[in-house]
Image (tube, rainbow, N blue to C red; front, side, top):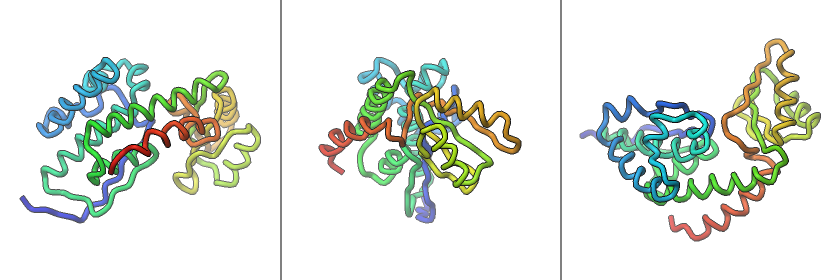
Length: 223
């Protein structure tokens, strides 16, 4: 096996899940199946469900509820396949919860510990979301400048949560306000808004409780 240390591994965050995710990877690579087998034991213990079944069968509402676990485990399975091929990263990076996948890929903690952390993160975000009247939401916007997104956030009293590119960003806040943003954008030519399948106001002032909870969780984690 030739070891190649020339890659940068980048890991996605929430909102990228879909029913059937990972099916091809699991079919073609035993390393991926091994990861999911181990993950199933841990998710069954923590949630009463096997993450492989949630990824394979859904339904979508259930997958959305466990999206962080699903994305993390699938990312770990992809890492196992790449490592088996001798592809080791020179650097790792992650988008939002993808930071935890990046830490796993770098060897900061094992699969089971990673699943525990992600489970705690989801619970923390659920607690924060429960405090928002009507729940929180996020909308990804294409076709506006950063200045225009800032103005929109001010108009609806929500937060700019993510800046992906010059013309793509994410706003986060209470669901009724985010819905208002989406309705306004429907009439804007060349602009597209899509509410993410997350169920919370991540990366905003309304998610501060989750940050405080996770601070307590992570301070005891040995890396």
